[in-house]
Structure formats: C-alpha cells, structure tokens
Image (cartoon, rainbow over the protein chains, first blue to last red):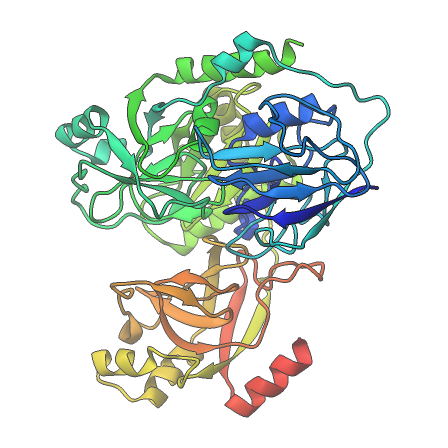
Length: 298
Length: 234
C-alpha cells in the first residue's frame, strides 16, 4: 500500500467520497464531495470505483509527495481531467484556481481512511470521518488503498465534459414554503443576481444581493432539510444548504436547487455571481437522468 | 385530523428527490408518535430506492433515488405504510439521566436568564432539572437531540448573536426547547450548564446517547463531580 505525504495542504483540503446516506435519524447529514461529478470523473480516470475517496482542494491546491508510489511532473504542467503515472519521489504541486472552487485528486486505489458510518468523507463541524476528522495539515501521511486488478481507466468524452460543466444559472424547483412568499418576493428572487458571500463553506452557501422579504405569519416549525434547499432566514439573505448541511432547519425555503446542478454548487467561489431559474419537476428529473446517462455511456 | 389511512398526512415535494410528510402544523405528542411510527416502519421494512429519512417535530422528510422513483410513487408507498401505523408498537421509552454542572463557566447564560425571568439560579436549575423531556428528534449535527418542553417559566429566546463556538457538552435552552451540544460548534442557544457525558461517540455501538422518543432528565452535579466523571468517562 502506498502513501501520500502532504507537503503543503493548500487552503482547505479534505478527504471526501460520495458521503454517508441513511443516517438522518441520528442527525448525521450525507456530506460527501462538494462536486461529486468531478470526484466520480477523477476516479474513473484512474480506474477506481466512482465513489472511492479522493482529496478535495478548495480555491488553492496543495503539494503532495508520493515517496514510494510515484508522483507527477516536477514542474511540468499536468492537464486537468487526465490520469498520469508518477515515479517515486516526484511531487505534484497545485496552485490557485483559475476557474471554479474545487479540484479533486484521485489516486488509483483511493485514499484509505477509517470509515465513519460507511464513508470516508470528512465532516468538519463534528470532527468525524476523513483524516482525523479535519482538513489536512503539512506533514500528514495518507494511505493509498489497494487497487482492484480488474479495474480499467475510463475517461469521459469531450461532449460529456462540456455538458457537465459547472453552471452559474442554477435551476431550481419550488421549496416547501414557496407559497409563503408573496408573488413579488418570488419574482425578485428569480430576477435578481446573487453574489456568493465570503463566509460560505461546506455547510452553506450564503448569498448577497436582493433582500427577499421574509413571509409574515410567524415562525415555522423545524423540519427536515437536504442539500440544495434555499432557506431565507430573517434578514432576507438566502442560504443554499450545502453538503455538510444540518439535517433539520426552521427557516422557510423558497426553492431547491435541482440534483443535476448540485455539482455546480461545489464550484462556486466567493464573489461569483449566480441566478436562479425555475423549472418543473419533470424537467428536473429528465436532467438528472441525462446526467447519469453521460456516466453510463462508456 | 390524521386518520389511520393517513388521509390527514400532507405530502409535499420538497426537492426533485425528496418528499415531505407532515402531520399537522403543531408540535403535539400525537404528531410526534406518528413521525416515530412511520420512521420505525420504514426502518424495519425498508423501501428500495428510499435513501434517507429526516424526522422532525411533526414531519418526516423522505429522500429517494429520483432515477428510480417519482414523487407520486413514493407518496403511494408511504400511504400504504401510513395505513399500517396502528400496527406499530412503540417500545417503552428509554429513560436517560444526564448529569449537569450548572452555572459558572459551564453555564455562562444562567445569570442573564435568571435576570430575564426574575428568579434565582437555584430556582432556574430546579425548573430545568425537575422536568422530564421528550426527545422529539435529532438534528442540526450528529447526536443533537431537540428536547421538550421546557417549563413555561424558563422559555427564553435564542441569543441575538450566536456564539462562534459552544463547547461540547453545553446544555442550552431556546424557546421552549432544551438540548445538549454534542460537539464544539457555533450555536445560539442560551447555555445553563455542561455535562461530562459524551452525546455522540464513534467507539461504541449506540453512536448517539439519545434517540428519538427517549425520555430525559437532567441531574445537577458539582464541579468536583463533573471533573471526576469527565475523567472516568474519557
């Protein structure tokens, strides 16, 4: 089993897979990669199962050494969306992002950590999962799992990559409390451009822009919430619940990002401008199906 | 009214892969029991394609695989389950006792809460520790139990500005609820004390100390006892 040494962790780098589903009754949210599509694509490139654990880097990448396994081009540029072999002692260095917010490093065999509720994903708020439940630090050593012999490397077509590109116009369906908002508030929400606030994180993406009038009629009773729900708390600044969301919430939800656009949330940077486009349930379903077909196609 | 056929339950599409089932818009024991019964039934007889369940006061959010199931199909399945809720025998609730050291550095808001209600710390502690609470559901973070109801005399709004970091084990109140923070997280509940008990541990079978439907009592302990228990349970 090989290892990866963390020379520089980057801004915020965690071990992530596709998350742990099914533990809502314990208050444990599914968590997982902020851009699950990218992680899955990365894993395919190196011949892993799509859900193998990889490293999720945020805004600024790190430097990683593969001392007994192989690494990459000391200094020579490596293209995104490619797999490459590496020789012992080589260092893979990643710089700041040019577009998008997150970059995934997948290694053949996956990152091997002790699973928490069946998943390798780091849950920062509770300090559980991943590597010691925290973001990586300089000097950390990560184990690489055993690669299955039968695995083959698979890449996606240029067309698929294009179709899966992160979007800035997020498609949404109505939230459970959409009707609580007056027509004018909904119109404002859909007509406005919102800016991603600095204090966004894996729990929630906070938005700045047009203040959505909060419905009158008192407080709502807390109910279950999921990734992509757009809450409007007092103050009227929408928050998109993200991968490490709380499992229940007490603010009215005006809309919900469709599943086929979840990965786009993972690529939003502070100060990015976005807007919302309302679509119907059937279209949302069709878009999800189409996305999965791209993965099934080769 | 919620009938045995579940006609009173309300279904709402919450997202393209989830359905919200609500039992009224009021926090009642009856609604809570409907939530727990539906949850238990879905746990004992899982439905292929249902991925996750988020129970709350009077609703259950059902997450499903949108590639294999549609909202209408999930609703039809859930209606059949709702028709069988009467079959579900809920076990006698577990009684859980949680030792709490009130006030001082462990309960930084105790004094302010007393001032707001015109009572002494001893009275506030007595009110908080003499009631038996129901675990309505777990939410927010792993193992965080929403406990109710707080004595009316102690009902206090959340802090206007939440703390950036509430220490693990902190016992807080908000509105007519009380709860224990399992992890050091941000939080806006007013802190009355702290328990040395671990609310969520990954090195035991029952990860969460509390589960939905449990009954909880808080027992006041001294700072010395807190230190001793903390050492014993570390």
